[in-house]
Structure formats: structure tokens, C-alpha cells
Length: 220
Image 1 (cartoon, rainbow, N blue to C red):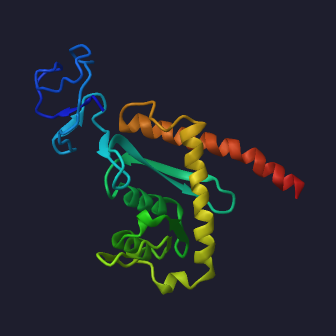
Image 2: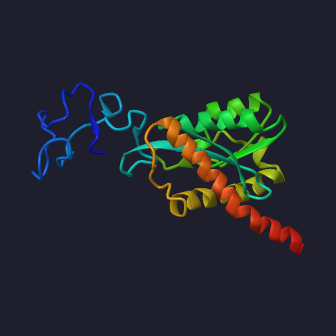
Image 3: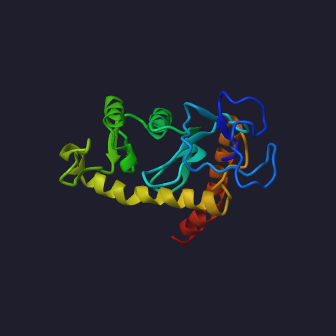
């Protein structure tokens, strides 16, 4: 976060008033960001320009990050493919469409969490004749009301219910990546290198999973 500096800033020193608690000066001086408005439009990271300031939900702290999206097959819970993109409000949906084009045949189905319940994403899948088994994101608080883009045409089928149960297993993949594989924080700088590392971590996750699947098959 200290590398997230104004785009029009001159030099690497503290002449622009970002000096914080007085623990030294220069490039590595402490900085206090409270009360300062920062956005991707006015600021950029000096160490990784591809990283973007982003927060997953309201109330969470914004961080410089990338967005990782993975595609899992339902039968064995293995990662099929993944995309690492610059963080934005539409990056996950765009990555989902890209993965669908690469791996899901016509008349197939694609499940996802509530973040994929958007009009554009659902419409893109239906145009490709892929059934959107997306979790419904609808609410009525009295002050605000939101209707889901997934209606009875999809939810009335038994397959939708099964997809909603199985899709949650993808969190096991991301949990393994963040803990065992150490991918809670990227070890690389730049989108290309980080995406390479992300795919390598997905492959490692599959290699850990496959011996257990083979053992179950032999036992059966």
C-alpha cells in the first residue's frame, strides 16, 4: 500500500506530504493515509502498476490486488482452468465468460455465487445456450429491493439444486491456495507473472487431490 502514490507525483521522496509517523524519510518512510482520498483514477502503484485498489464488499478494507477466477468440474472437484485479471467490478464475470467459451459446451451448465447474478452475465450465458446455475442474489429490505436474474425457468429443475450444493466446493480450492500454497498474497509483480503463478498453484492443487481420488476408485 505505501507504493500507491499519486500519478502526478514527482520523484520518490516525501515532498508531497505523505510522510507519516516520522520513522525515517525517503522511499521507505512510514506514511499515514487516513483522511486521504485515493482511487485507481488518481493513484497507481510504483512497484506493480498492474495491481488495482479493490474491495470485495462494502465495509471491507481496500487492497491492491488482482482477481483470481477458477473453473471447477463438479464430479471430482478438480480445477479445470483459471484466469487472473486486473481488479474491477466486472472482472470476475468477464473471466467467467472467457472460461465458459473455452471449456463449457452448448447445452452445458455453469454455476457461480451471487456475484455472478448480473443481467449481462446471465444473458451472455443464455446466448451461448449455457444454463446459468447462478445463486440468486435478491433481497427486499423495505428501503431497497433487488430481483434476481435467475427465475423459475432455471430454479425449478433438479439440476439447479445439485449445482448449488456442489459449487461451494470451489471454496476448498481457494482455501488451499491461500493457506497451503501461500497465495493469500502474490509472490510476483505484474499481471503476467502473477497469472503464471496462479495457474501453477491450481495445477499443484489438482496434484494433491488426484491421489485421493485414485485411492477411492481402487477401493470402490
